[in-house]
Length: 389
Image (cartoon, rainbow, N blue to C red; front, side, top):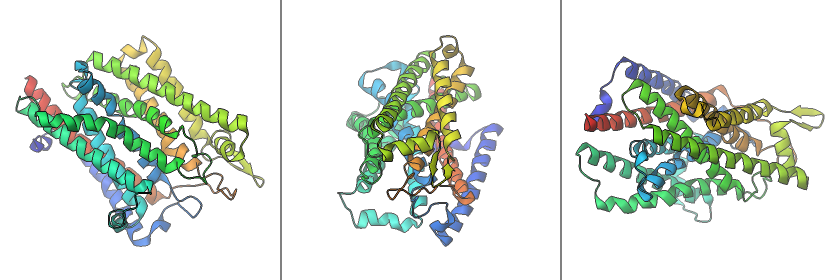
């Protein structure tokens, strides 16, 4: 089936060359980082996790979002998701691949990843994160490819696959729960020391993943004959809307805890993210404008999703999905991780600015993910359209 990815029109190959160009620049910068070390990045002693880990955290959520299709389709036999479920499984594969690349970039030297295997430490969340991420990647590759292969042969999927499909559902929940535990298990970081981190992660994941998926599905409808259907589109909008509302509610609870308790460690990070933090006569506020843009984008997206006229219009649905995706990317992919380092446990403030090389490597990893996604979607859509013709 993979040979179907080698056939495409001019637009398809222009897109592929564009992605390969970005990957090439990112690879060159990664060679520089490999030779020089992590001093090539903007990270420091006080900010040990930068844009690599923040992107990893966000993308784990995008991968987990696929369960919002798998669960209704396979467990509740919701037939309207029949054409889009495979897209969700393949998006999870691309997202997990990007997560693993970001971890490799953050380690500096790829061989350090072997330490997790050669010296396993079950009391470390990183050890369990390695297991759940690789396990989820395996389950989605297995389920997605076997189901698609069965469709190509016009036969039902084999019965032995069902246990793996059912196993992938709690596994999707586990990947983002374990990622949340990486943060809320750190006692010295007040902003992350919260039991609501895991539910908040899952709520944002169930909004961000389906937003990207629906946006791509509507783009595919315009560039190919593949249509996921009006019923699936409207159901996804409902899922995105209520998951996003739940995420905003959880963020509001964080504000209540920080400001009502007046605990400095919790309150100061929120203050730094949304209003700027004055410390030793200097105002630190490099993330404030991004966080307010995130808030405006999030509520604008919800307004479009809840207005009957705009939720029926494909153009406004695409705008709403784009706004929601970037809103949650700023919230979790920038603010949550980078804000957690301000102030430090010793009450120092060190703001983080990613280096040019760091940004180039990050864009290279994102381009690699979209390259994987493009190839998988090309194969999947070719098979489905061939079956229907």
